[in-house]
Amino acid sequence: MSDLTTHMGAGSQRLLEESLDRARSKLDRRERLGNAAYAGGFLVVATLVALLADADRALSPWLALAFVLALAVVSRIELWGDASYGVPLQIVFVPMLLLLPTPLVPLLVAAGLVLARAAGALAGRAPLGRSVLAMADAWFSIGPVLVLVALDAQLPALAHWPAYVLALGAQILIDALASVTWCWICQGVSPRAMLPDLRMIYRVDVLLAPIGLLAALAAAEEPVLALLVLPLAYLLMVFARERESRMKQSLELGRAYRGTALLLRDLLEEDDEYTGRHTEDVVGLTVSVAERMGLDEDTRRSAELGALLHDIGKIAVPDEIINKPGPLNDEEWAIMKTHTVEGERMLAQVGGLLADVGLVVRASHERWDGGGYPDGLAGDAIPLAACIVSACDAFNAMTTDRSYRKALPLAVAVGELRKHSGTQFCPAVVDALVGLVSEPEAAEEPAFVATVAPEAAPAAPAALPAPRRA
Image 1 (cartoon, rainbow, N blue to C red):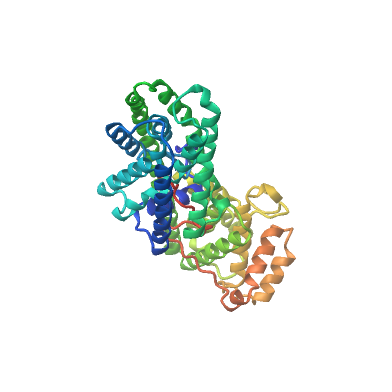
Image 2 (cartoon, helix red, strand yellow):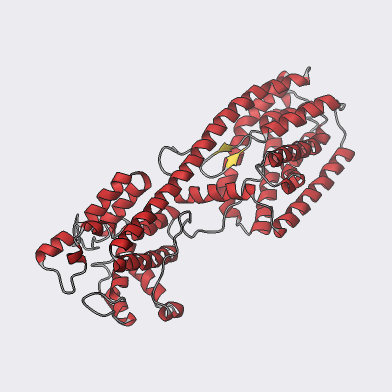
């Protein structure tokens, strides 16, 4: 798990926000139908297993009720990773498989999940309509039951360990198939996109399954003793709540950084109206280029915020230099070139994410051949986000009216980009930028206007779903 004392990655922040929002929102029609179909299918299969498979233990209603309540409690514990969470069901689920009538376990698991979801709804954590459909998340219990019944390993015995290993594998396989299929059909999320979430869930399952097995083996004669694992569940809950609190604080910190960036942008616009409008256009163009290049979300966020704040240091430059109608003399130009260093200094004082963005701001006027300022960086030594900001900044400057000249035609500006590709600008960025502005719709509307909101995230791939067993 990442250290949340630093700012969260852009992708992790987006996924976490979407997961938390989804848990509080109502299901749309597509999700309702999908969940209803999955819940109905599970109910049919679980009922057939309960009726057709022979159990090696008699049912004790009170013991079954105790395990259902324990599973409901444990299922409310969320062990968060970077952007998804696992649930420590194994410490209760494994003893249920071996200490209760095994064929009945899927129905009992479904009852526990529905009970937990209903309790969460009553506490205001999720819509009540999600409760009954929670049994769709119980598909994972079918695989282990079928394996244990088929291999005659329903009772706890160390000699059955190969069957237990196969049962765990069947659990992971059935759950992965159910989760991937459901999210693909109901939410349009590709199986590849789900891999990080699934790895987190199954890591928790594999690590906690031996603890559940030990509890079942120790309680073979007195099954109720297996519930002595619940203090461990309480300990996990304490750690989980602390972790969740830190993650939410990290989200709030990320929003605060973005809000600070927008406030600084507003101050810049108030100080110089042209620079403010120019900044908005550069942000929109930068975001589009970063998307076209297929960059990771952290780089896209750095580019977006770097474009938003690339001119913030100009607040420290005298207005008579900023608005001078003619070319700057050497002394004025030396003062103008300090704005990148000044911008980095201002952002370093804010700290955190914006301190990292300050590195992009500082490098936003470096050249690919090393002839830029303030550090003379060259080639790959220049942050890629800064390369994008630099090219987009130059293109926007060429295609808008300035105090000392009229805007250049689009074809001329594109020609200048190509001419200086590999010297002033990164070739890969020029290719993406030229391809973008040369598209018919771009040619008709050359101004790229930013639409950044205080809590908006950079454009991203389809949202990942919340874990199925949540």
